[in-house]
Amino acid sequence: MSRRFPKIDRDGVRTTSIHDRKSRVKIADDAEPHRAGASLADFLAGLPATLAAEDLRAAIAATVRARARGRTLLWGFGAHVIKVGLAPVLVDLLERGLISGMFTNGASCVHDLELALIGRTSEDVSAEIDDGSFGMARETAALLNRAIARGAEAGIGMGEAIGREILEGEYPHKDRSLFANAVRLGIPVTVHVAIGGDIHHMHPGADGAALGATSYRDFETLAGLVATLRDGVVYNIGSAVILPEVFLKALSLARNLGHPARGFTAVDMDFIRQYRPRVNVVERPTRQGGRGISLVGPHEILLPLLAAGLIEAIHGGDA
Image 1: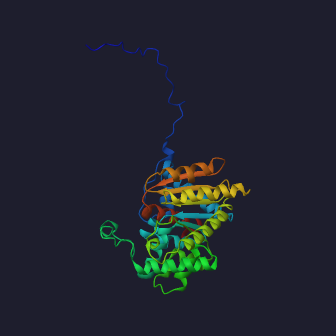
Image 2: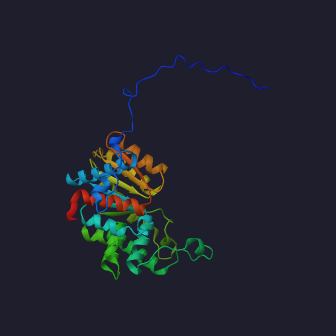
């Protein structure tokens, strides 16, 4: 038999006036419908003044402000950014002075080099892993391992070594290569590898000492860039583990040595919110000043939108 409880007595409820209550949503923050023929700047201005729309505008504003003040604009990205066709967007930002330095993972080298060489990349891993043919392209492995070995001999980092290979070699599509253009423009690009994590590591031409030496040299370069991040901006686009971990160590090293790497804006962009980007890029580094922003959405839409917003904000109708 169910037990009956007395109903609550609501006669003593205390009320407030809607006019005195604080409200988090107001019509002044509503979106403005887009008009045919309106500019992208009009579109961005017409987004609602709330949540992700405000975060997007804040990321654009912070980047524009940092650029105007000559601060560091550091862009980290995973290989997926290259695979979905966004290298030309980042190359354009390089040309416009909107990137001071880039850091990425080892897979980015593979896709950037293959696209520069033959205009195609990305294997069908599910099919090729069955017979062991996944990752066995000899040209990709030979060129990357040769470039990395030469980089170790020259005492340079992996990113610069691969950029030189593409820039100086016979690559029909080198104009869209992030690594080649970074080297051409004198902008640091660093590569942070997990040994065994990239396809060219499987080939007999791979040299573990060269991989370690060039990637460690790039860590030193990245730490030097992070040391200059005061009032700048750092982006982490599509790396869930490697770059957030490497960035946090570079930041700790820079601060340990007395560099004022604080007060910067940290922006994470990915399909979903991931643990390490959230804590190691967005939250922990900005605890004592600055701002952390998370933008969630497909790279192939969100990054071009961000880049277009930056171009509009800096160049307006003259871009």
